[in-house]
Image (cartoon, rainbow, N blue to C red; front, side):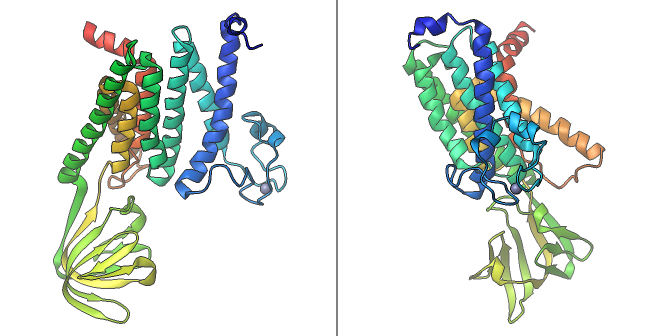
Length: 364
Ligand SMILES: [Zn+2]
């Protein structure tokens, strides 16, 4: 049983099944991460429970893929709907793990496993970013750490036999990944990060609890605030709160705080206010610091060539999808789309087809 010789003798596709099942089980755990990480809840306790009735879900009703299908996406206790995302993530992870085994298993089982770890991280990052517009540090910075350990243990990840060489390439990849996205971020901020809205002199703008009301239109805060650093800024000739007034002060509003001159208030304590101004600056940016750390993690696993490919392929994917959505009127031009999922998809393409694409490119 514990003789490696015995296991090595198992047919190749026995391991294909093992990787698929392992992927489904890991996918089940990734679902927990996707739900709980952005809410800063513990990953281990409490155990799985129905989001509607709170009934704990026993292990035999929590089997990856099988349970969701058998219960037709409903809770066994209250019949409340369980999101198809649970099934989708389990299936996707199972297929990605199987793909890793089929693509890299012949070369080395360890290499296949390292790629599985990276892909699991990409799945979590994609689904969280899609819903919450953030990628938690546990995934990005944690990913950099795991990338270093993985590079040391499996140097083949960086196409070498020497762990020290692999570590150098890992270090270079992480640094290059962070640097290149940071540069793009700064450039983007400079080019289109902020939108200045010119208003008629003496215009009155109203900040309600849900939206910024300009003289000619209204922008819900949901379209302006994505990250903690996002801020609406203006120099006001006059600001009126419920109980006080200010003259000639700078005003800065973020999701959490309102700053008027030198004074700061938590936004919950201010139901709304009005300001008189002729110019207002609202946030608009394509990428955040989360993407910088995310690309550092990808660089730690895939090296600088992987970063370069991921950067260009994700930009291409992003513009194709963006233009298509605008053409279909499914997306407003001003509303940013999270960028993390494009990075994740591009990195996945590199993992499975990078070598072939590189050869094809150099051949041309
Ligand atoms: Zn229930």
